Length: 275
Image (cartoon, rainbow, N blue to C red; front, side, top):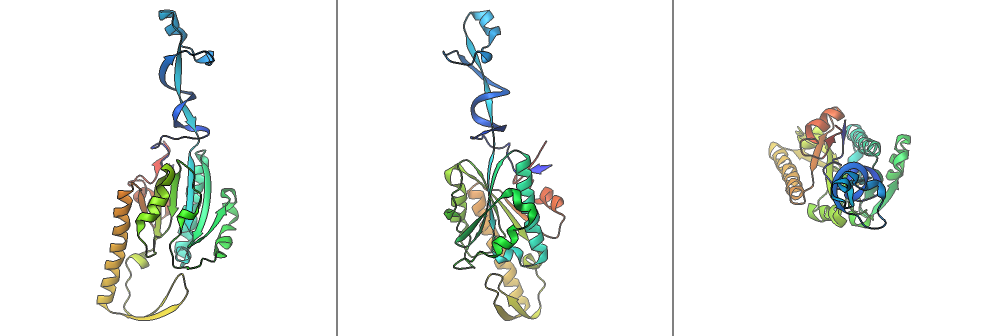
């Protein structure tokens, strides 16, 4: 009942069921024009000819196949807890399956820093992709996905599935997603324990990317600074997403998937209903 916002775009590409930018042979009437030698006589407006004695052609909106480039942030933080790993897998499968069901041409790329891996959409159900991306060895595991390294297709929906938990200016990433007239859409899974933790006392924190341990004592002031920094980080992403006209849907991991999508992705137009 939900899918990526295909209807909100005028597409260019191979034949399909969504409105294109040119004329074609669908049943969606668009306009008239004068007949030219070589035109398909099946599209002559014979009723108009009977009235005027002049040949004219019926033009119909072409129907094309949408294009989706799906980029998965394969950094370890996306799979750090079973809850978050499960939500990441659910979102990846939902975005892929709903796009294929809509007749879209889908390509999937997993990225960790400067390393990338192409995933065959038809093999997702086999769950081999998780072992494949675990084998990615970026030069710097803490660096953001270098999306500019991917050969993205023109006029595509560019879906970035990432928790966005890396220290980087959002603008270069969003510019890379928008190149060649692409449309960026962001899905960011998050857990309650990272968004609003209740830490107090002594902890050993584990760096999700480097897997190093760091002892800290959490006082109320420390927790307050963390929450403020976390909120400021995502406010930065929200402002950049608005500037680049990129819907940003933050998806909680604790809520059932479809309920979370209806509540958080549909209102920001990261998804649309199929009817």
